[in-house]
Structures are given as structure tokens and as C-alpha cells.
Image 1 (cartoon, protein in one colour):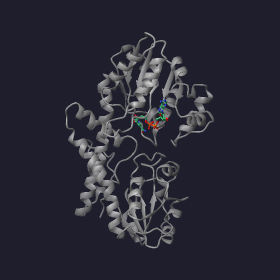
Image 2 (spheres, rainbow, N blue to C red; image 1 turned 90 degrees about the horizontal axis):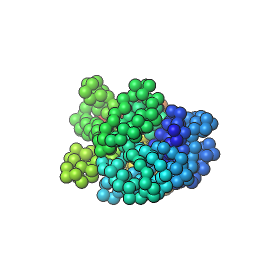
Image 3 (cartoon, rainbow, N blue to C red; image 1 turned 180 degrees about the vertical axis):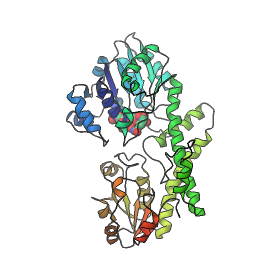
Length: 433
Ligand SMILES: NC(=O)c1ccc[n+]([C@@H]2O[C@H](COP(=O)([O-])OP(=O)(O)OC[C@H]3O[C@@H](n4cnc5c(N)ncnc54)[C@H](O)[C@@H]3O)[C@@H](O)[C@H]2O)c1
């Protein structure tokens, strides 16, 4: 089967590559000529574990291609996945302008039946709007179907997540389209992956409902951590104990500087907007947004309390990506912290194993260093903001020599307080006495 994947970002490139690994002929299309040129050159434009090898394998087998020629690839394909960005608009709703522009382009060049699949995260009602736009812009009188197939992969483990998902959601009222989609995901049937078929609106809402409850768990444990800070309890023990309850589960109960990334922030805002447009005030989702914003600020305030003032101080930030194992810095807490500290007169020295190129585009005026020890040079405080594995085993003797006053703020609780304090550091963490 010929498949066209439009949008070759974190989702489109991974999904397209994995579908080609399932045995389909996939062409990934992007408007970004540099990205497509890189891919055609054997380079991988994003950092994602295992992706490079899988791309190379499937390109070699002739099942995976890259192109900027949307019209030509659409014409050759039976199934067209839409994986372009759906960022936040000013009013908090999802900005679907790129998605709808691509839909109009597709309508203008379709000569026979095709299935349009939304992989992008889109609000309820998008499939209906796509149908309307298609009908309005079709050049030829051909049939089409729209399937809502939200994606749940996590950056940092995206390939594994796509190849071994917890479930696949297929939203459509067309048996013809569903049969084609089941065929695409056939290798997952063999792994007993649940394939959940729903209407379009339900599929669209499932994705937002999933991200909102994950964001809720993060905000919830952050608030518990804040209470722990005030009453002298230990959030690690609280989270471990409540996580043993199978009704709660241990995942997403790690406190820190708040969630970031390209999904949770915009998706929680979007569900508030979706509900609001339907006449419902989604109070829990609104609280999640508020708690998350306060958590980032709380980290800044706690750091300031520890060192008096940021004026004229040097702060070392370890980790810039919004989470480990990715180069994605969209909405990363570290960049928020860097901006705040700079505004209060601090000099920032930073290191991230892979995200510095991306971070530099957003925050050019900080000192980017070659490793954690270089970043700690002369720093009044070392803040661990992203829990990369390589920060879990730092050489504290080396760090101590690099800093005039040894203060460590471990926002992700990756160290045992007593161990770091025994080494002569002032140690702060999140929700632990
Ligand atoms: N990143 C994630 O972890 C994740 C997980 C699940 C779902 N999603 C959703 O998937 C969607 C894509 O997210 P992403 O992180 O991959 O975005 P991204 O920004 O990494 O990629 C989007 C790509 O679309 C391309 N593009 C823009 N306009 C185009 C056009 N007119 N024609 C062709 N290509 C065009 C861009 O150049 C870019 O390469 C979003 O809706 C997001 O919410 C993301």
C-alpha cells in the first residue's frame, strides 16, 4: 500500500518510518526543504533513539522515501496521514491553519478514492471540518473518508512506543476506511494490541482526555510535593506508597519543575477551549494549567531564597530539553527558568547532552558549555532541571572544585539528600525534608 505522511516532525517521521517497517511504501512529505534534503542525505534532523537505524534500513529496502512534492505523492497514495503541527493559538485553542491548508491542497489534487487520517492532535469537530473543506475544494468528483487516528508516542522513546503501543484508536464511520486502517496496523494485531474503533469525535477527544489526565497526575504530585516541603514530609515516600495502589499506579508521580513539551501545555489549554465552546467550564483542566505555571515560578522563587538574590550571580543549568532523551525544548521548564533568572540579573551557564542547538535558537544569550563541569565553573548554584542519565552520577568532588559556594538544587529529586549533603553541599530538592 502506498502511504503519504504529511509533516516530517517528531510524530510524522517516526510514524512514517515505523509504518514502512510494517512493510508499507511510505513517502514522508514536508514543506521544509532543508529537512527533506537532510533525510535524503542519510541525516536524521531530530534526536530520537533508534530512529536513524530504522530509517536507514527501510530506505535501503526501498520502502521509505522523502519528498517536498505533496501533489505528486498524494496522487500516488491510497492513505494520506496528516502529521503537521497544531500549536496553541493566542486564545488557547489549537491553531489548525496549517492542517486545513494542507487539506485544501489535497482536495485540489485528488483523482481517486483516498483515506485522510489525522495523526495530529486535533479538537473535536476537526474531522467534520476536514470533510466540509474537502467537499468544497475537490477538483474531481471522487470519494474520500476521514479517519481520526491520534498518536500517543512519547518523545525519547517514540520508536518503541509506536511499534508497541498500548492501543490504537481508529475513529471513523466508514467500514471501507476502517478495513484499510486495520490492514496498515495488521502487524500490531499479531502482537495483540487492542485496536479501538470509535466515531471521529470520540477518537479526537480520547487524545485530549489522555494528555489531560497525565498532566493532572504531574500537577497533583507537584502540589503534594509543595505540601511536603511545608510540613516536613517526603514526597518520594508518599508517591511510592500511593503508587503501589493499583487504582492509582506509580507512573507520572515524579515531582519537578512542572510539565513542558510540545503537547501537554497546548493540549490541556485546547480541551478547556473545546469544552468552553460546547458550553462547559472544565474546571479541573483550568486548575492544571494554573498549578503548572505556579510550579515553574516556585522553582525560581525557591532558588532565589536559597542564594539571596540573582543579581550578579552565576547559575548553572543542567538539562535544557523538556525531558531526557530528546532535543525538544518547546515549553521546556529550563528555558523559562533561564529567562526568569536572566531578567533578575543572573548569568546562566548551561549544558544539555543533545538539546543545546535547539535551545540556542530560543535563548541565544546564555553560556553554552561542553559538559556539566564546564557549566558549573564559577556557579553560585547548580540546578538540575532535566533528569538525563548522565546527571545521575556526577562527580561531586569535581563540581565542588568548580563552584565558589557549593549549592545544588536538584529539581527532579535524582539524588539522595543525605548523600549530597555529606559531600559538603547545600542541597535543595522538591518535596523532601
Ligand atoms: N511530539 C509529540 O510527542 C507528539 C505526540 C503525539 C501527538 N503529537 C501531535 O502530532 C502533531 C505533530 O507534532 P510534532 O511534534 O511532530 O510537530 P513538529 O513541529 O515536530 O512537525 C511538524 C512538521 O510539519 C511540517 N509542516 C508544516 N507545514 C507543512 C505543510 N504545509 N506541508 C508539509 N509539512 C508541513 C513542519 O515543517 C514540521 O516538520 C501535533 O498535532 C502534535 O500535537 C505530538
